[in-house]
Length: 195
Image (cartoon, rainbow, N blue to C red):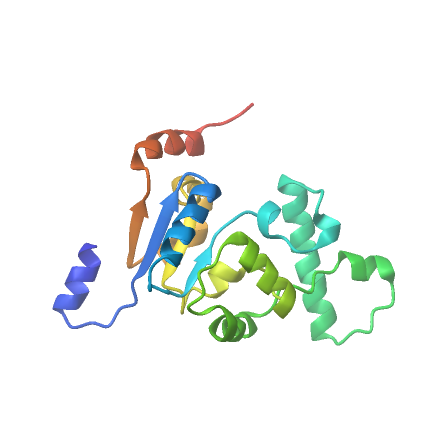
């Protein structure tokens, strides 16, 4: 908040995001429903896990590290096939490739055309991802330059491993913790280790 005030004082035009955080996605869905009752229609994105947002059906049963690794391999393979305009015939290669991940410029164009001023939830992001063939998991980071409202669970900023992924979104942002009495517990969970 201080950077916002200082920037305004100096006459700087700095984009400021709002990051609205809650403990669970069901609580974030409730926020989206409450926003729908108003005339406020920000460009928004929702951070969620691959388990919640992945559109690639063959990865549906994978969880955790297996899903992350399969996703990474699929994205790389999909990019390679698109870049080299390969007419890949091997069904196993095509099955492993993910064609939902797009380059940032393509996603920005889709986002500005179809998702700007739309109150998003996970289901809407997945539906739009299927229609426009883009990955809703990567959408929030790819849309950061035109998105003004981000919804995410606490652990995305309270877990030091995850936090490093979102530094450029956090800068110049106003962070709102819904039900802040749960933050200390979430912070402890983010710093704990299960053996």
